[in-house]
Length: 113
Length: 113
Image (cartoon, chains in turn orange, brown):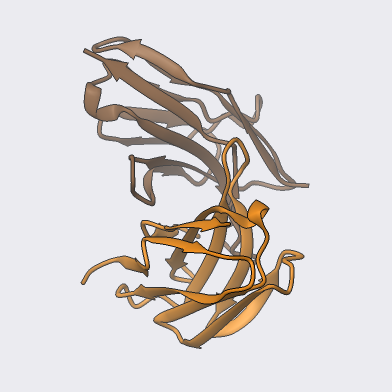
């Protein structure tokens, strides 16, 4: 595998379910990000991890819970979501000192019923 | 605060037409500026970037010049191809300090044969 991978690519879940999104980067980067992409809105930065430490939480509801066990892996745990949380969730990584060029995964298309 | 405004789409062009997608920004200081492209079913890919005023980023026939006086970073291509059909995002970020990127809403380009 190369670059940034995300699984699953598609997910349908009910409002009472618990699921997790996984992101893995094979680039040796030390920063990872979760973004939410909704139609006709700018990409919304959700969480930032630098050297496995969370450095940014953009007022994201607690039903989204990130986890970064090491610098290559990032998870987004989901529980009791709402239909308006349906979106494309993008993971990205970067090298903290490289001028902020971020590399994105293909995303997970989430539908909450 | 930091923000990016780009022209709303969708934009539809015939093959070999000239493309301009406007982007202006608001920022404190002198950010780096980026254009990302998202092809159908994929994540965002960096298309080009510029890190200081008057720099020109270029890649795959696309160009954008960092204009501090007009706070703009318009994307241009002299002759578009069907394979250029995608969503284009303008973004700003910082070489040092916070590693957030601020994105515009994206402009969908469709090129017809």
